[in-house]
Image (tube, rainbow, N blue to C red; front, side, top):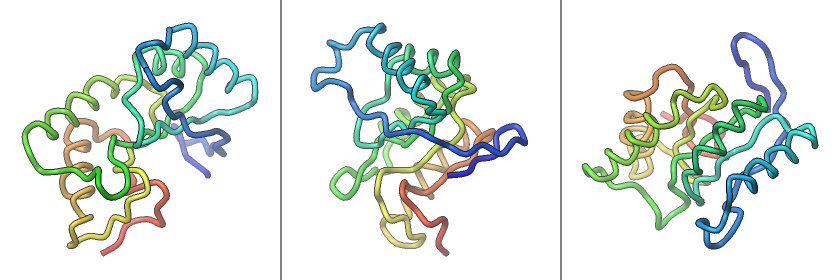
Length: 155
């Protein structure tokens, strides 16, 4: 996948970042650093934070910034059954997530969900009309994309 970052064309080479452990509380900062160093040593320059997982701890984003690893970031929605609802709780969670992470230069793209077909003017249009609209209100400096994978925006 080709990205343009600060005017430079960058061919992404990387992987999905899924939860490293079933009990996330057992993961240490050293484990995240080691994983990211391994990715860097393998010549990966981008990781996708998977929408079926979790918002990762600060050490993940801080280390990506330090190592120059770009982040393609899904919102935490995945396939059917884990769809957003327009309510104050989910809006606040989206706003909090973006405010917390927007200062990280490693994040190059916000993505609406994992493997959700986003078709405007249907129930799945909620990813654009609510999720990504909320994201853009908090961080208009980055592009948004409907879903991973996606062929782009529909009418």
